[in-house]
Each structure stands twice: as C-alpha cells, then as structure tokens.
Image (tube, rainbow, N blue to C red):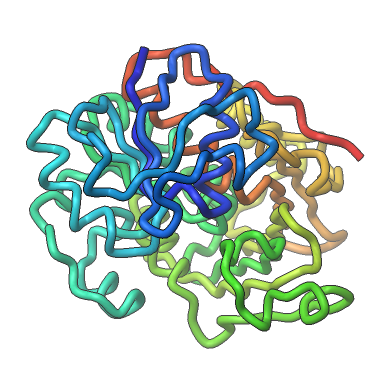
Length: 345
C-alpha cells in the first residue's frame, strides 16, 4: 500500500483527490492537513465521503508527512516549494497540483505568480506531469509539477500536429472555456451563483499564466518557435472544460491522414479518446472521469485544422492526472483507481 498525505484537503482539488483515492486499491490515506479545520472529521465537511474516509483534518505541524510515501499538495502556489526539501530529504515523493514545479523558467514563474522561487535546485529535477507526453521521465521522478487544466487540453490537442511539423507553430490559437470550479473553493463575488449564472465572459485576455507553461512544454516537441494566443472564458457550469484549438496547416494533408495522425499518437493512451472526424465532444461526456476526448474538424476549403478538446477540469485537468502520475511513479498500472465512467446526465 502507498501511504499518502494530502496538504490542503479542503478545496475542490483536495476533495477530488480524496474521492479518487478513497477507492484506490493501493492507496492508504494517512494525513490530510488544514490549519483552519484542525480536528474536523473530513466526512463532516464532505458528507459524500461518509463511510469512505474516516480521517480528520489536522494542522500541518501535527501531520506526520515524512512518514508518507508520497504527499500531494492541493494548495495555493508557494506552499509546496516551502515544504518539499524536508519531504524529499525523508525519501517522500512530492506531487504539486499548483504551479511551483511546472515552469522551469524561474523568471517566468516569478513574473506570472508574483512570488520568488525558494528552491530552484529542486525545480531543476522536477518533472512535468503530463503522462501522455512525459511518461518515461515520470517513472523515476521524485517531484512532479502537475499540469494546469487549460494546458492539458492545449498540449494534447496541438502535440500531434507539432510533432509532425505540419502546422504554423508560431500562430497557434486556443479559445478555451472552464466551469466555475476551476477558480477554486473561495468566496469571491465574481464566482457567486447570482454573479456567474446566466452569464459568459472572457478573462485574462491580455495575458494568462497558463500561456508560458503551455508554450514551454510545446516547445519541447516543436522544431519551430511556438507562439500561442490563448483566451480563457468562464462558463456557468460547475465542472468541465472545452478548448477549441486552431492551427494553420503548412503541408498538404488529407482529412483521413489528419485523423490517422491523432489516432496513431493516442492509440495506446487509456485516457485520451480520439473521436471520429467531425464529431462534437461534450463536456458532460467526461464529467467525473479522467477521460479527455477530442475531435478534428477542417472547415471546407480551409487550410486550418480545428481541434475540439473536452475534459473534467478537476479530474484529468487536476486531481485525476495527479493520481495517474502517482500510479506511474510507483510502478502500478496507470489506470488503477481511475476507471470511473463519466456521469450523465
């Protein structure tokens, strides 16, 4: 059994980790931290976990995290890098769901997140946790920087095209939408029901911190310099993400060949579903699951390929992907504890 600690278990990504790990056959939840909720049984805050999780939240100073095999950080940016050195010294693996170990470019991290990076030596060895593109490195990693939700859809949608070198890498466009849970479990006016319901808006149009993360990773697989125009939107649903990606083709290629390119790229991937050409994947087809679905389109007479990508932002976009990485790190079947069928309607 893998002894697991979770730092910051009260937010949406934290409870999603609990939901997944509560039925994981190789997971032993040993500590869940929260300063504010110290002593409160987890099932009192989240009745959905009654009979599944019998732990209580405890303050970080009481949690025996150094006795765990792996610790997940479902915390604000900056927390994981403050605690990682002690955990690593004790032989504990670290999986951070925030951004502390996503960006190798320290200057970009400090620019977009507004805090200094306190353990750059550990950052150098951190592995970006997108299994479909980085599986071999994840196997031997001690530290994982779990990808952002939007970057997961953009990277898996653009990757086959960039690897094949058949699109204009400098002019990629991503038009993305996320449910309100992507903003976290906090009381802010803009995310209240009466503020976000029956409305639709873009944000971060002049610049979003997921842009440098995505570009840094896509650059690893592109022979040409990558340029990305990314616009996120908030939609009035709880969970779900839909990304519409655009790339200009620079080579003659048939629709059938495009489809084969994606099918070949993801044929062995348990959590990527390449749907038939011209399909329209819906966010509800992935709700509550670790599945990402995508479909290709090509407007008539156009040299533009359109990739539609959907996922659950809290699962494949966050906590599910983190557990997928854990499975790989500990030599388990990658799908262990993650074969939840999407919830419909």
